Amino acid sequence: MSTLITPHAPINRRQLLRVAGALSLAGTVPASHAQASFTHWPAKPVRILVAGPVGGSADVVARALGDQLGRTLKQPFVVEPKPGAAGVIAVNDLLQAPNDAYTLLVGVSSLVSEIPHIVKMRYDTRKAITPLAELARGGLVLVAAPNLPVQNLKDVIAQARARADGLSYASYSPGTMSHVAGVLLEQASGAKFVHVGYKGSTPGLGDVMGGHIPLMFDGLATSLPLIRSGKIKAIAISSAQRSTLLPEVPTFQELGYPQLTYTGWMGLWSNSALSAEVQAAVQQQVQAVLNSANYKNILNHAGFEPSSQRDSQTLHKDLLADYERVGKVLAKQPI
Image (cartoon, rainbow, N blue to C red):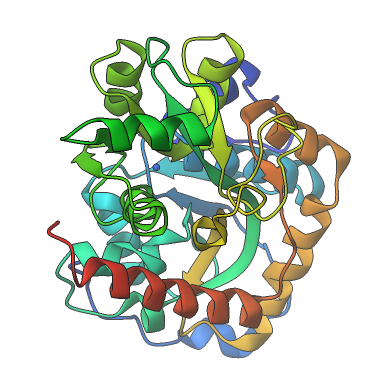
């Protein structure tokens, strides 16, 4: 389903607050002849593909970005959610589209750092797609069921040690950092944590709320409304600093577990074959949005932290480091 964001269309705030929990590809498309005569972006409507469902985290960010760009640049931005296959479908569509910056993609950093470890791919996303900008970011939060008798990480570890079968924890998908974080906590604490993989945040969080599974590592955006309403308990967060959205929740790092320091992010991606000139033109316009108070306010309401505004080269370097980190852990784990 496509959604046309016109330059003056108000963004749907109700939909923004309904945030749902986060590569067999065609070959990359050669740089088009149109790039050679590129002078201005955008000169026509722009498609923003979304690696996720309507109302999901990527959709929220894409609509916020498209709304702001449309208002400023006086061109329509068409948001097209492409759910399924852990982002494979969206990336596939990006690489089959004309390579002219009129088809871009909004999706999580795991498209490069994690998904290639769990999906057999024909092409390497570390080379096939390029992060033009970090749009939003957020750590993973360890949440507990309301009936689990714990108040902090020390209690969680004690509970796991006291049980012969340890404590189970949910992830929003096997092979992602939501899975890897539990493995790292087990290794660092010596307690037993048993992974249970789900297909998305929503079913996992549902079982945590219902007390069917004790713990979950989840993205802050999807857990935040449930934490605030008291339906689940926040134990610790993986970001390097405490989140301004949950300032009372400590980081794993300050609790003595720096191994679990991790921040995921939502990015704007292009085909890697897009020329440097065109990439720079897009980045310039996007940067203005990232600095706008309205955009930051939308992210805050949806449970995201503002962009760190790292440049494309730094983002790519960090992605490769995360890819290696996840790979080393998963090499010894069944998925």
